[in-house]
Length: 422
Image (cartoon, rainbow, N blue to C red):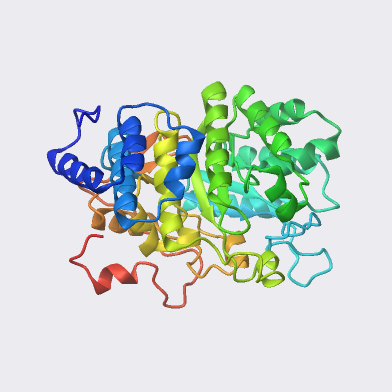
């Protein structure tokens, strides 16, 4: 079988050939198209998500890994950054969210510009190149707050990249400011905003969004804001949050829509699957009979692999969320088409609020250990995927975790089996 690539190593080509030979004809046909650099339809993407045999799954994983190697070689990237959730007060009532507080709650928090800058300084002193700012939609927040914290960070740290404000926050800030999305985004860009997280996407399907968020930010609004951001020169990530009330048909449609936007705009830097963490989520705790407790193991693997296959040639970077899955599982998924581990984070609040137990930070040195144990080459990048350093024969500067782990170690599994590369 002709697979279309002449620069993959013999071992991978042999493994791929064996896996494809064992697959069903319908799956082989779809994967063969992908390997010949042909676009995979939404319907075919759904078929890949719905496979039931291990032979078909293995063929999908091998294909995704081949496409990953073709696009990214053996490099696995990460960014040194810090999450700053400037407020957890939010009244939007998204049913899946356990992060939001009421302003009178004891745990309610709303940071001043000075506090945000102080945390950004801390990140800079630890080698951070990015701060990621997101927060709840506080009823008392002014539209000007968003520009004020961007200006404050840029005044103190002119070289810090600011990756900030989900489409939901842009919708809210523009509404508060009585500005169009374009004018609001242009002002933030001129103040120093460097890029945006493409969160609040959840599942880009009206019926599903009605169940998750009462469609407060509709699919059309999310798409309009993302397209406008790209038009004014702000690059964004793209995400999917899956494993709750959704199905494979929704996953394939969501990825196809992301691909269509990328075809037109070219502004997405990466695609990030986010598995639903059910533990403390009201969506699940109030509806355990109708809401799933997150995706299955196979669905997590397939989500990353099929994303790589459907987005091949459009979005080259597929990221795994270690905060959602843990370091050990994230390392395994590097063999499912993934080439990026996201950020060191330093602080992480949203996944922890939903019940995730995987920690707040993985340091640069730990990322390098994790990546090398998977047989790959660690690369530090910036927010828009420009290479900062390739750690082939040296290590990054070592820092202690910003938040005390109380003796927990996210890479303990490597020390238990040091000779095994997963």
